[in-house]
Image 1 (cartoon, helix red, strand yellow):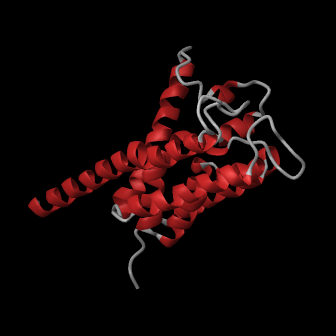
Image 2 (cartoon, helix red, strand yellow):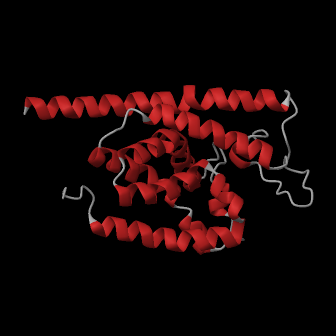
Image 3 (tube, one colour):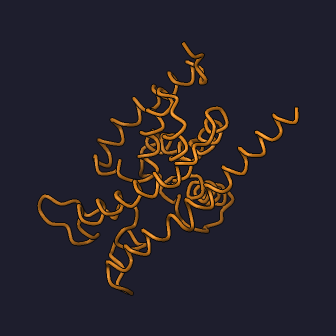
Length: 215
């Protein structure tokens, strides 16, 4: 029987966090909130940790490391009184429960955990292809499964999940055809987010292997 590559305490601690996060997020923001890339990453990481799956962990790293780096930058800039991207304004909303905001701090530490997990489990180069397929399917689900913000109808939730209707959460973009915006997202994510992260992780693992071989 192979020796576990991840410590049991990590698996249990992460599971305990998710056991708190899932019901609270479900109650406060609804089940649709789990279709955001970052929340999917948190869920899939749970599976990846227990299965010790290099592919699942690598896919989540490819998907969110760069976007969450912007989140971290914006969060610390906000602490300094600077408003750069306004991605983290909700973290400083006094009307939002502290527990909810505390849980949302996972946006800051999950990327660091993913980097460590990739280091331990190794980077699976299939992650770029698999995440491109999964990310494209998710965007299509968010676009065709939900109405644009501001146009809620019975049985539909007007949530701009993963910004498939534009950069605003209050109204759909109007400066180009809706499907053109969706196409830009489907092309832009693999080219601007997934591919650069893939190259960085692949290069880092190659250097690690080379260093180990030399030693």
